[in-house]
Image 1: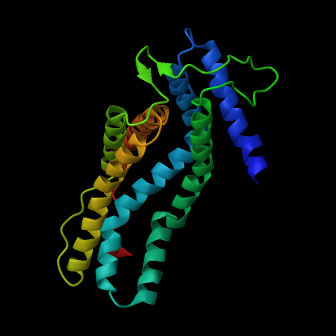
Image 2 (image 1 turned 120 degrees about the horizontal axis):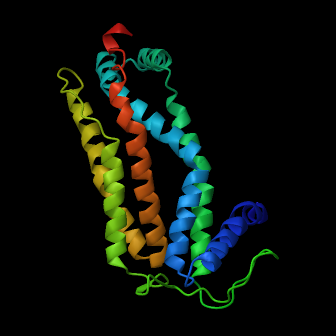
Image 3 (image 1 turned 120 degrees about the vertical axis):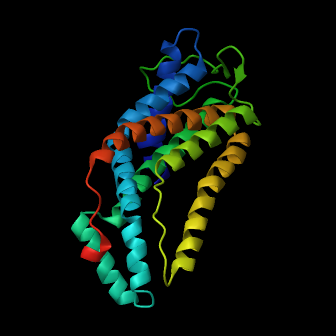
Length: 248
């Protein structure tokens, strides 16, 4: 399995990074990382688009889901049937949201390995025969940024801020709901809100502990995801509202 991962994902991405490094004037590794990020986002666009679409659909249905949870509180079997009926009526498959994320995960691991290996001092190894070996990659990007250095808090904070922006874009305001179970719903909403803040904070500290090249990649890929979400979700305002739960 390790060899398959190396051959199918790691080696092509690493070679692509070196090719871009050879083509960029001045051999700027920062520009090469940004170009690699764009190419990977284009490659994974259909998968990411599906994931964003499913998340947005689930957000639109959240008020109806909350209403059903309160109406059938303590009736797990009946609640499951009602939820499945709601998903069927709205043509939403809640379980399919995990698949795009699982498909993207190996790419993220491969990119992590590529940057860790590419930013190491020493000769470049594992290149295809048609790829020119540039020798050790110069980690200084844009003339001032050392991509091999950790503890770059500026990039880390920018990456966390971008992730917070991305998470807020997918949030929708829920109408206030009263009655039995409201306390449970408020607790769930509070936990969801905490995650919107906790994940960016974790991103900041994780990015600050890794080479700056990885923080730069994370910042760039998150900003591209924000742009993708903006383009995808902008026309959604014209869609008719989801079917009220009372009609399910």
